[in-house]
Length: 372
Ligand SMILES: *Cc1c(COP(=O)(O)O)cnc(C)c1O
Image 1 (cartoon, protein in one colour):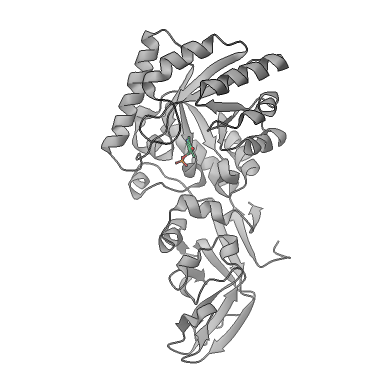
Image 2: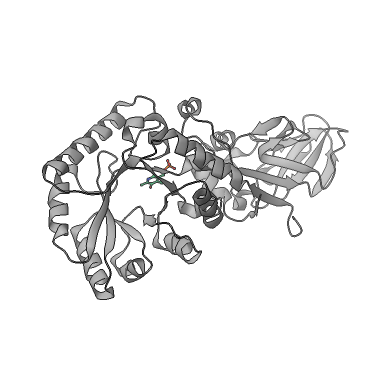
């Protein structure tokens, strides 16, 4: 299982399925569930995640790019796949022929979508993106009616959805998140008054889904949560999720060092007592943050041990008590559980001054993924 390399990640797809089920139970039966699997399923592998999520009742999938969407379609995923931002016009022939649903933020985009769909003899759908306060992409809410009325005159194209995105939903009771929800709701009432009907309205990402039940509308878009990660500590008390990713390694080298001996680039750590130094064969090229050097811990025999010296590109070192019996081939857990102890992704992210969102993407790069 680790024939070529003594460092790997294990992905528990059943945990992903159980997390999707937990969200399905959490939202009204009338709301659709979009599993967001951009960035190769937040580093977990888009296709295995998609299959697990589909088996647990995910209705559709959200990605960031056309290539990510094509990977799912070509991989045999039959449920709708949406690109959550507006892709380049040049991609539209492939987007339409693959049946991918793009987001739209400009009329010129919908006009081109209409031309391409007409040429291919099909009807293309899109979701209109509205900026209710995130300040990223999207038309202003007051322009939604005009946009949709104009687009409705175009042949071969239909607005299947209208959506927006939260900036601050991870803070419970946050005023600005509540204001975004209010602006979105008012815009929807305006559309209804203008007799414009758009089937799917959606606003909530993972934190919005957990903390703002009023914002579920006709669909939620959940990324982080399906991997068993929480957007903020406040979210933990509302829903029980299981982390799907474990990162493991075996010691490739062990030696005893005496007081004063240095370890690693820059010799940033020196032994303050005799100890055993074990080397693990993974590093920042695998997503282990260099910023966590001399701060992070790993598990060995269910105990925490300190990482010492700078994390290198492909290796890092850990210090163990003198005479503890650590040996080449011993298994270490970098993220996840071992016996009764565990290290969460959030802990390592904090050492690296970042968030679990970024760390999980980085860890998806070079490490071989083993699916449980
Ligand atoms: C990434 C993304 C999501 C998922 O966000 P999470 O916080 O990971 O659930 C939802 N909607 C849009 C538009 C996104 O870009």
